[in-house]
Amino acid sequence: MTATTESTYSQDWVPDTRTLLIGDRMVEPEGERWDVYNPATEQVIATVGGATPAQVDDAVAAARKAFPAWAALSGEERSRHLHRFADVLEAAADRLLPSIVNEVGTPVSLAEYLQVKMAVDEHLRWAAEAAKVDRTVHLGGYDKPHPTESDVVHQPVGVVAAITGYNYPLNLAIFKFGAALAAGCTVVLFPSPRTPLTTLLLGELIQEAGLPAGVMNVIVGGTEVGVRLSSHRDVDRVSFTGSDGVGAKIMAQAADNLAGVTLELGGKSPSIVTADVDVKKIAVEMHLRWARNGGQGCAALARLLVHQDQYDEFLEAGASAFDQMVVGDPWDRATNVGPMIRADHQARVQGFIDGSVAEGGTKLLEVTTPLPEKGWFVNPVLLGDLPHSARAVQEEIFGPVAVIVPFKDTEEAIRLANDTAYGLAANVWCDDLVEARRIAEQVRAGTVWINGGGAMRPDAPFGGYGRSGIGRELGEWGMKEYLEVKHIQWRL
Image (cartoon, rainbow, N blue to C red):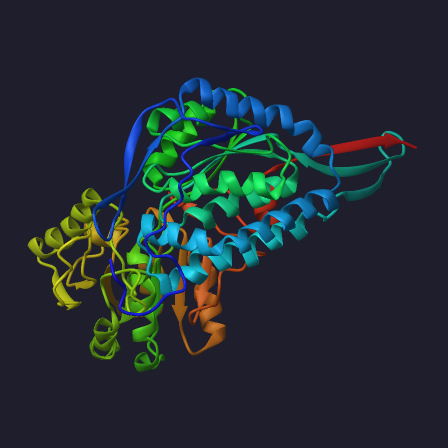
């Protein structure tokens, strides 16, 4: 592909690493092989091999062997290792970014921050500092049946299986291994087989950063490899990002060993627009937000709940957003909507659109520019005239498709917002901040932004209610997913 604007990155570059990282060795994979595609061109950009069951066992054993020494390091020592790793990742940005653009399809203009800079500069650096924190809680005295005092201390869980989704391969990995390593755990990192290249590159960078052998291990593979890892008797915690259906299976696999799980799953996140808002100021921003990364984001605010008095004006105000949506070559800096990850996912997303129209829904706004001849693209569309019970309103589409539903008053908006199996994120647009806060506290979601909120804070928890998952990532809440709590009590 030839971009229409110049770039400082090598646009055809993909990592040449095809080896697994197990302990201190780069190991040739001995399992099944598969092709990795560029979703914007449909071209095979790499062929990779997966781990065998024995190699999964070796990776877990390496993490288990490394755990005592890593856990015994001071927080300051682990912090220095993590900052060094962040230094290496920063220096490798010119490799990480094209790897992500070419295997995920995120437009380069978005990927520079969302896929790379945010992950390293903000989230990994925050985890490095969090490693230094002494989380001991002194409970003080207790006099029954005789005087005692108590401390509550936090100790690392052990070996963590970190299983990531395809849409943000570096971000999702750092959300997991950043906190796990800072807490004193060791990690086996396992990416989606759709986007393994960036994670395989991490194996090289881990060695370059000088992390002790076995502290982080990298393996790839298909479903059987994932099952072997998540059900492994020597894995103490499984952290997974992906669909709720797969999350439920992973939870069952981990249950045999009573291993803990952290599950960051899907969403059908609402964006509520109250009657007092000037929709001309927000409509374009709302549409451009749910469409970014091709709508392939678990917290995409793609369920638009708009006050009935604002409905027509909102549609009119938002029409220009679709003129600003450029679908195509991710290396063209004018592009802001990239491809779907694979042909089957493209067909699934298009099926939601076609099925909604067949059920009586309407394409209220859409991009009508002809799609590129190659690539698994879908033109963004806003669907309306659907009941809130419709499949497209209730299910996560994971593509550039939003739905709009009018409401008559705030209480109905809250009811509709909560009328879903998910509860990952939400947004409330409201000029009255007191009322906005009241609404936010009644919406059942792990993150609620008011008037667009801000960037994803590394010190704030991320995760959801219901089928959006279990536990939290990021911030102190994410750290505690990888820490056991121990009460120590002594007689005075």
